[in-house]
Amino acid sequence: MPGASALSLQNVSKSFGGHTVLADISLDVREGEFVSLLGPSGCGKTTTLNAIAGFVAPDTGDVVIGERRVNDVPVHERGLGMVFQGHALFPHLSCFDNVAFGLRMRKLAFSEIEQRVCEALELVHLTGFEDRFPREISGGQQQRVGLARALAVRPRVLLLDEPLSNLDAKLRRAMQVELRAIHTRLGTTMIYVTHDQEEALTLSDRVAVMNAGLLEQVDTPEGIYLRPTTRFVADFIGSTSFIEGRVIGTRPGGVEVGVENAGKVLVASELAPVLGATVHLGVRSDRIRVRLRDGSSADVLAGTVVDHVFAGAWYTVLVDLGNERRMTAHLPEAPPAGVASGARVVVEVSPSDWMVLK
Image (cartoon, rainbow, N blue to C red; front, side, top):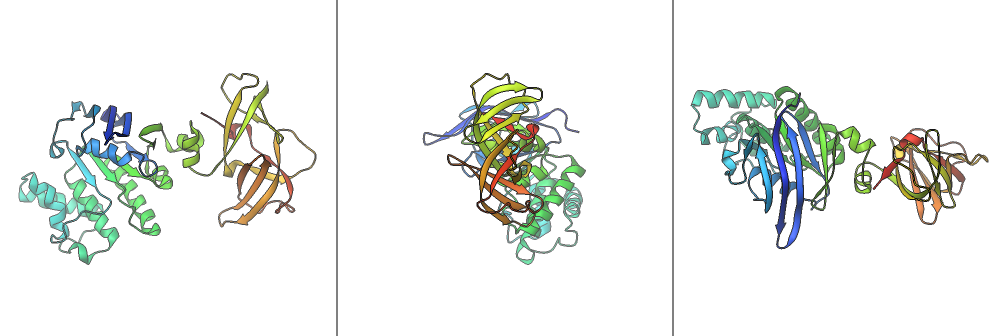
């Protein structure tokens, strides 16, 4: 189980050419934890990883590994392992020699090197590949060699910079399973950079969502998906519909929010309601139900179907509420008869499924 702090970023900031890339980032990662840095391109996640590794010096703030401040400690003395997006294998070295490279730099005895290389290759299911060169193995196998090389030095913290992004979808999913199994077996602290939300949710103990150099939210995968605190997180993770309303009252179970010319909904919220206050709401597309209007107007929003399509795992229904407001529902089964383009419908959401956003 995760315990003491393995890594801490304390108010770290970084600018390049007057452009702020990291703005007062603070993050604590516990021993044995798998934390993903998730966000769109340019949000600062790779710069954060580079600051941890020592490739980039923070303008302000501290990087602490264990209990040691490492701002001025060289890369090779930080006790880290790193796996890169493009494998970064030496093409003229065999798989054995690629994995052994870091161990030889540490001047370990040959017997120790041999034992660690064999253990690392076994861990990534490449026993028997010791004498092959990178050009003789597949891209997925090359990525496994890169992972074995990083693990062979037994790092205190393993940094992974989008290591699976160059693999096809099927192989990427298989490698996610392998990586998670390796983490469970070894308990190595891992910091993983990705822009793939599904990958982050699948692999991580916690996810740190970044946006424009800021940490928007740090939480468990369930917390990030079910309880996002900002519109950016709700929009970036999963499929979400957003509406704006005003508090019109309270009753047992929550706060009543009126949506202009569409209806009202009941929102389960711990926030102290202020009558007339504007509320920004979000709801996951798979938590929306759609049915034909039947005269009932309790806790529903009225609209018109704009489009409906079969999307494989679900049926997608797009509902227009008027005033350029639309909600997208992902239904696990075919929508009720009559729910077709142009149909007048209502959308229903359970009070606990509404998200109150900043």
